[in-house]
Length: 140
Ligand SMILES: C[S@@+](CC[C@H](N)C(=O)[O-])C[C@H]1O[C@@H](n2cnc3c(N)ncnc32)[C@H](O)[C@@H]1O
Image (cartoon, rainbow, N blue to C red; front, side, top):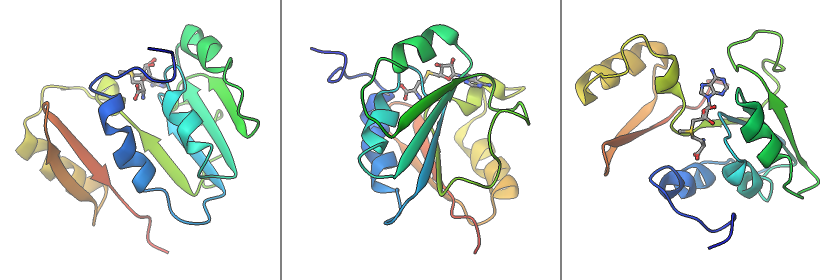
């Protein structure tokens, strides 16, 4: 298996993210991009893709990827100065948000309730392997 073809429980859900990319997507952001595997796939569907990860080692690995429309930033996505707020057409985060939660051990019902408040209209779906997906379209 090469670095581009490995599988794990996170990678299993990358197609869900790729399917959600809108037509004509200009700028995409992958939050907590890890080694950049998803960002590299997004590069085929968006004009430009930025990956951000707080692990310098992950960003070093990701930066070896060759896609010309792909770039990576090392830092915390919650740092208000790092990312260009409002400039992305599409934002993904796979297996990342729970790292920032005060109580990462929420049950599905709690996650459903909390995300409905934060992201009204979000589409929540329970998945296999103790996972869930959230898809939210920012109101026009
Ligand atoms: C479980 S890995 C998932 C990697 C990748 N999204 C995937 O699908 O394989 C979580 C990643 O999120 C990154 N991360 C966690 N909290 C972060 C934060 N506050 N800012 C940026 N990256 C963060 C970690 O460094 C790690 O690479």
